[in-house]
Amino acid sequence: MIAFRWQPIRIVAIALTLGGVVGVLAKAILFPHAENERQLGTFDFPATVPIPQWQLVSAKPLTATKPSQSDFGKRYQYSQNQKRVELEARYEHYTDGNIGRLLVVYTPIEPATVVPTVKYREDIGYYSLFEYKEKAYLSACLNPVGQSTVTEQQFVQNKYSYGWSPQRTIGWILGHDDLLDGRCLWTLLSTPSASNSGSTSQEAYQNLETVWFSWHRWWKSKLKR
Image 1 (cartoon, one colour):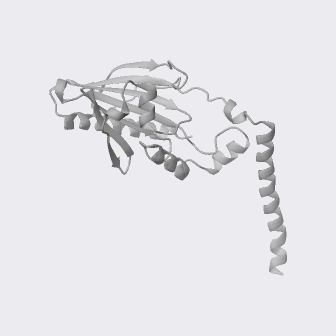
Image 2 (cartoon, helix red, strand yellow):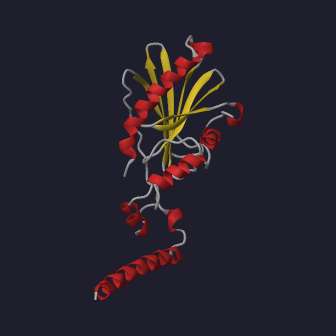
Image 3 (cartoon, one colour):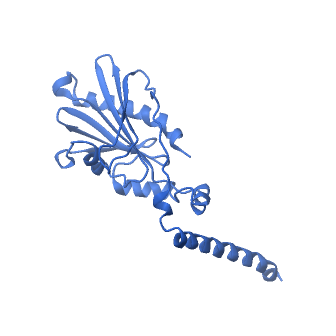
């Protein structure tokens, strides 16, 4: 008797599942390029991002100079007394999260010539520190969900762990969104290192980390959707 009562529910569940599968397959067959042709829209960087105890000196938009680059970017410069930190951010809608590759795409830095130190902070995630031509750098992918990442493996794991939601699934079926959130706000901070700033390399890294932590906290809730 109990099995008989559950039978209609099972039939409805199976019908809904098959209907969803058929709908997705039909979309893929009838509109094979819909995913690629989805409009990415625009991404507006604010005029300023407040960093406690640091003053904004300038903020300038960055434009793509080659097809592999994102059209959405901005360079911010901050100061604190004699200290200077430059922050370059690029909005990557589809990326593999590989910081080494992003350095090649956007900068003259040669990843093979630097020795990065990857650090982890529980409330932030992973970020990379390195020196190149008398400058100290910090770089990471600031992800909308989960934690920040440095390597492709970390980025993919973060995306599959935190990038899915029921709302995104509905949007994906309707063709309005991606099934997984694979966006990244790639951030590159730099400051003069010991050789030409009068400070030690450790102090330079501490300044970068201070700005990075504040930058991450400010953006985290604003990137979610």
